[in-house]
Amino acid sequence: MNAESTERSNEEGLLGVVKNRDIVRLAPEKPVPLIYTNSAQFRSSIFDITISLGSVRQIDDQNVVVEEVATLVMSPQHALVFSELLAQNVANYEKVFGNIPRVPVDDTNLSESQFEPSDH
Image 1: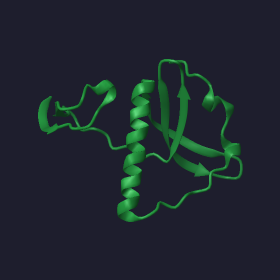
Image 2: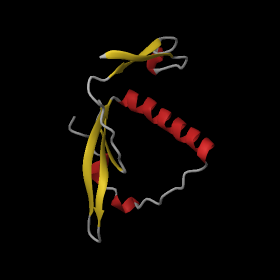
Image 3: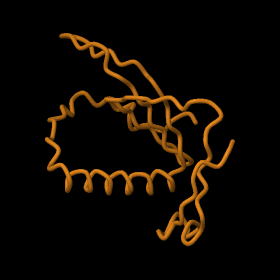
């Protein structure tokens, strides 16, 4: 991999290891896939958080068909920082473009298995 860009971090990162260090971003050896998702299922264990990302393909009276497109697995510490940065980016988006309309979520569609520990 070749260095694509370098930037200086002034932010306090996980355990303070990123502050005032150069972050070197490497160009991938092959194209990185672009993944669209409109479905996510979360699982956790003591060691990691797993997010299964999917794309809804079909909805009918009895089923919602979701094609799984990727799985993210990260430590709880990384998931915490990730969630904070995601919330910050959504807030910044809303400052620029206005409030994102909230879509009602039917909690009855959430199964118990989504909240059980994963096998990882």
